[in-house]
Image (cartoon, rainbow, N blue to C red):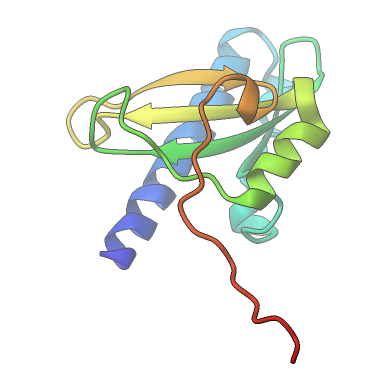
Length: 132
């Protein structure tokens, strides 16, 4: 199951990487399209975002991709690191929610800190025993 989720995540990131390059090219910004970077692939998965892109004016965008084969409103998991990075990068942070991936991939975009666009519910906790 974990391998399947990892594969789906990789495919969703690949989809968004292509989407961003095509969006910028279509907007006449092919120079920016060539600068789009799939950072979770080139630099690792700990940055709190997956794709480094730009808007049409050249401002940086930091995109976290969340992919599902289910519908638009199916909940997704976000890490503490991703939530913190969304706060720090604020207006430049985006979550691209890719849904119905296996049948007809579509996406919607959440802008800014994740707690401003989503209800966050804790799923797991780290437990540390008290010292004796």
